[in-house]
Each structure stands twice: as C-alpha cells, then as structure tokens.
Amino acid sequence: MDEWRDGVRQIQNELMRMTQLLDNLMELARADAGVEACAFEAVDINPLLAEACRRAMPLAQDKGLDFAGADSAAPMEVRGNALLLERLFAILLDNAVKYTTRGARSSSPPNGRATPRLSSSATPGSA
Image (cartoon, rainbow, N blue to C red; front, side, top):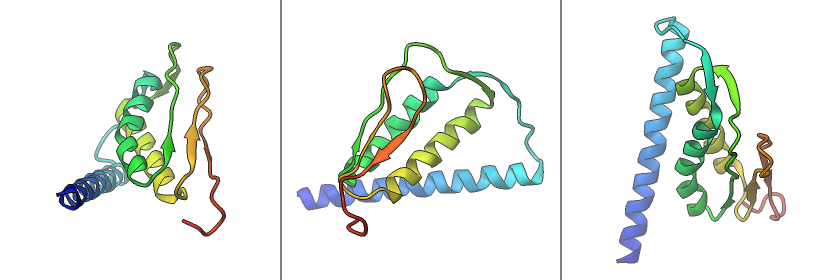
C-alpha cells in the first residue's frame, strides 16, 4: 500500500511540474508575441516568496532536501508584476530543487533581507 501511495505522490508531483512548465512556456510565448501588456506596480514580494516556498516544499522533501525559509514581518516592496514575479520565484525554486544534491540545506536569514543560499554536505557527483 505504501508503494502505491508513493507512486501516486510521484505522479502528482510530476503532473504539477509539467503543468508549471506548460504555464511558463505559454507565458513566454505570449510575452514574445507582445500579446499581453505587463502592468508594473508596487508589490510586496513576501507573500509571493512564501507561496513559492510552500509549493516547492513537497518536491524538496521528496528529494530529501532540507528546505527552510524565514518569514519577514516588514514588507519587501519592488516595482513589478505580481503574477510574473510569483512565476519567477516558482521557476527559481524548482530549479534549485532539481539541481541541488540530495541532503542539501537551503535557508534564508530572519533579518528580512532576501538572501537565498543553497548548501550541500554531499560530495560533488554524489547526487
């Protein structure tokens, strides 16, 4: 029964990845074609980062990665498009999970500054 559940979880994770990939490709195609105008405004990136981390957590855990983030009470505002920024963070975290070796640790400092770091105790080539 556990093998069946693991198989279903892997299929769900891959489905999520493929859906994200297709969404990203469609977004790029629309941007390249100039179909969508991109409205920029003041955006607090804290909730966007928190959501991207929440979505990346299961993939990181399935790979055996220690994935941690710090919530910041102070807003971190940038001028941009919230949807595109959320997608960017999701892509960056997805790539970080894909290309980080098993057993690595990712963390951010609790001082409210966005300083992503990845580290691994694994030896090179032992992924």
